[in-house]
Amino acid sequence: MKIIRASSAGFCFGVRRAFSLAFEAADRYSPVYSLGPLIHSPQVVKRLQERGVEVVEDVDGLSEGVVIVRSHGVTAEKMEEILASAMDVVDATCPFVKKAQEYAAMLRNEGYSVVLVGEKDHPEVQGIISYAENGNVYVVADFKEASSLPRKRKMGIVAQTTQSYENLRQIVDVCLEKSLELRVFNTICDATSIRQEEARSIARRSDMVLIVGGFNSANTTRLAQICREIQPHSQHVETADQIDPEWFEGVEVLGITAGASTPAWIIDEILEKVEKLKK
Image (cartoon, rainbow, N blue to C red; front, side, top):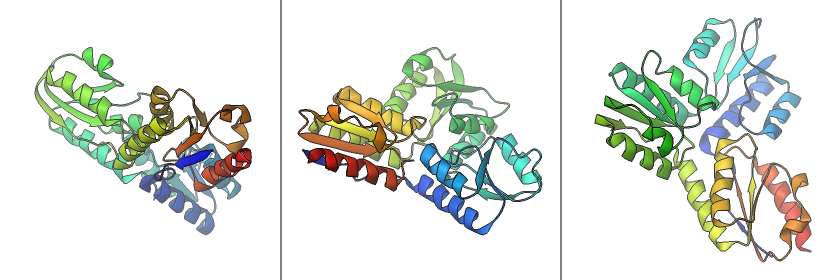
């Protein structure tokens, strides 16, 4: 069995930065808290907990120590609350997420109705929404939802950083018909598009694809969706112990990719198990 591994598999820049900041804080300070899970990888969160980093939902009742802001960012109100507290802050918000927050605030201030392309309940999206407070903010997941948007004179579009370019393009086309003035900021991270294109390429060449990453990870779930559309024999797993040997019957070419929040050690464990199955 031949294995094709995506060269982009694993941590993106923003996640790697958050990972480094969090473990550095764990080594230098005590107590250390993470405001929500640092990234969407239960295995990374567990390792941080083993190093003494406690996950909390707010800073109420905390009077000392360091609080880490997760890579997805937090709402503007929550950030104000943190900065006003007695806690020291390590801001691990992905720079690309911060840019989306800044564009949302700018569009609001300039009188645009903000259209946010993304998943309404995702923490990154909730954070971006908060920076466009007191404005008209519409969260749409796809062109069908965009089709129900009201007509506005001025519309401004930003996107969740892990969205696909194709989804953004389709929504832009809909909004062109619904506004007299449309301003679009492409806030999709390049790491996302690279991973998605590589996943498509691998799925076309493989008899089966393993997609590795947290089940709660939006970008990993999207990779799994992309692979299944091309190669139905695709499996999304978090860890090596979830692999079923029966999946590999008749498989001559196996593709492996991973989400942007998947640590290298998880990918290595997957590869090690697959290599054993080949024998």
